[in-house]
Image 1 (cartoon, rainbow, N blue to C red):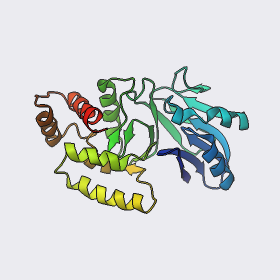
Image 2: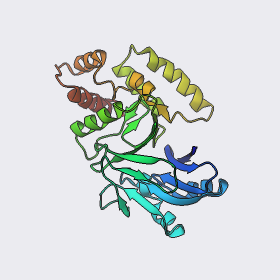
Image 3: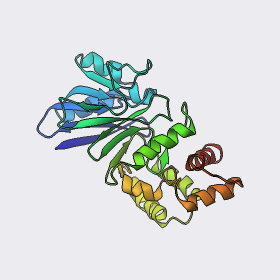
Length: 258
């Protein structure tokens, strides 16, 4: 059985530490800061053997060098990008078996937030960095809206019970924007009540289930007529493709909400 330890870092990041029950070997996803990871390793009597990197931003790779100095034999998996200190390059569609876990992971190209962003899919678990958030998605720092629409379309095709392990606690703010785009969505309003309670009690709103995201996340709902209508009304134009609907939702958030 895989255990997943959620480690808060910085002001709103999540780092993910994975290990099998009754095994000491552990894997960390996107170690932006080494300090809370070392603390979690010590508390759980674990030995770090592997690092999985989704993209090059410092809040995802900032702890790697320190961890490598402490665990010199560590395997660092990541996309082909000179900004990422990976010693094992993984590419879209590859299936990789880690010695430390009983499961293989599938690599998915999800460029958009950055040009080399990848996600790791285990059975019903997606570690997607900053591509998809609960009720939101990452900004387009390097990729195009076509890239990000493709990436999110891939995620939409995963099994509905897939849990989305994203890297930030942005959910309440994302819901605030989603209500502008999708004001009649009862699932969204119910989710806001639920998340406010969770956050108020000091809990975490992620991971979230893909089945739920498909009901509330405007960046996954570009195929819904109500979303299309909302975007067309807001921008006063006619939109033909779903990729364009996504583009205008992203522009709406970037220019008028954030």
